[in-house]
Image (tube, rainbow, N blue to C red; front, side, top):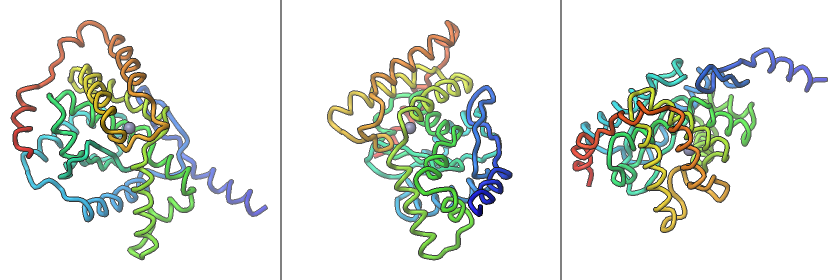
Length: 262
Ligand SMILES: [Zn+2]
């Protein structure tokens, strides 16, 4: 009996939230404010453990590209934050609430701004699809996720935040990854970037995967094969039509920024 009433209360608060382009909706138990609170706590922890790259020009450049894409995304209820972490790792990740991190290692393997837009739009799309919140909900349960949002600075709360970061870094399901590629390609084009940048990015990661079994969100065995992702992105790009081919890659701008990274 008690269980049923808890469920009914939960259903009362259940909101129908936008989780993709074209007004796609999903039922989400965690409100935007709670999601932001979780993201803030995770970002504080990330930045206390990892080194933020101390180069304002590089940070501003990456943030500028990120904001351009965030602006055309379907999460107008969030402020997005983009930061570069000083690490050789070829990786990027997003916490719930719009805190996106790219490692300087991934910036070094990219050759133009459109490829960077590919990385950032993929991560923005995980936030749009609320993949992080859904994953935490699934692994920890709604009650625990809500307790993180409301949490204090106690050791237990800190430990839960650490656990959440670990869960996010493990990566998402195949479907979530395909979705992040698909929405990401769509947002790139909408922001005026040549969406071929996404295909180029995935092509680079595919080549690297022979040498490095884990990269880009710590891809696990369940991660969709990169070749399948490339094929799907190519199909998405074909759907945009001829005019998209003229969209810029911003190679010179990117090369100038990249020189600053050691
Ligand atoms: Zn992803």
